Length: 53
Image (cartoon, one colour):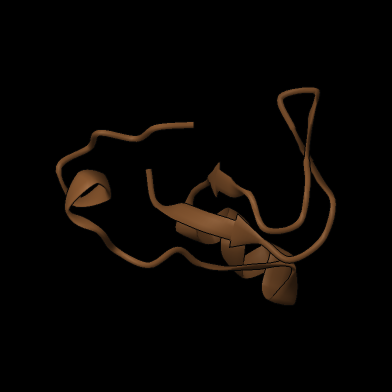
């Protein structure tokens, strides 16, 4: 699932995601959220599926 950066407070699976933190959501969800999220920069760790939170 793609990783995005929250630009606003969001709730995912009952957890609050603060602005500036990473969130994994589908592209469709990101499209619905519009400017509330932005694509996270692709790094070697996210490209290989090794996410650290």
